[in-house]
Image 1 (cartoon, helix red, strand yellow):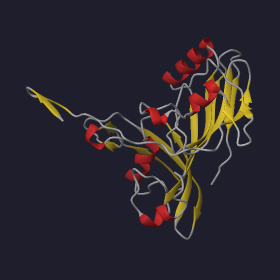
Image 2 (cartoon, rainbow, N blue to C red):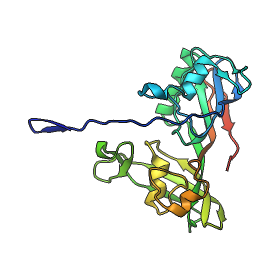
Image 3 (spheres, rainbow, N blue to C red):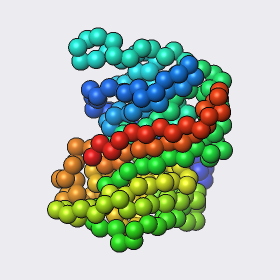
Image 4 (cartoon, rainbow, N blue to C red):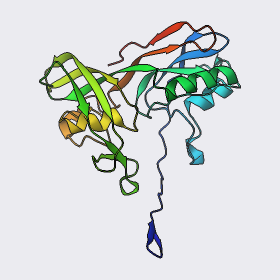
Length: 245
């Protein structure tokens, strides 16, 4: 930490190195303008600043993927761009632009919040209400990096709608569908913690040993559905990725 006059600058040191992800990025749909892909849990969306974190969804799309048999599993898409991201531990559906025009259109749709996304999450404990809405402002804090915090004074507004899908036993847990209204960093993770039901397998916002002993090999958060407008045809598109847990 360095000080200059009355200002204080906190230097963020990020030594995290993502573990190797052997699972492939699956191409669900392809045309000349877009891809719909299924991202595996444990893979970065974009390559990190640390040179050891080169492997990512974007890197694999641009360079092609090699399967376990040594053969090319997917081709290279030289102009592939990601208009949105999923966290390292989150799996599921993503849309990809394959040329400049398509990527521009998709970016505009995300900026205008016309893209709708649904997630499945396995939460700790039994959620009492069958549906509801979590409203809690989220703020970044360099002293918490890479976590964020709930702060109603300085945070940006954040809203998540949820619907209970199933309540399970041993241990008590609840499968919910989230429909985020906003798209803040770690929104679903910290909103789950805020209303008392953290996501199982979450390394940042869940310290319950019982929860993390169950299915602790991954974050139990999956992007299941995305709704958007095709950038060229104007067709209403729906991408779906089945629940993996």
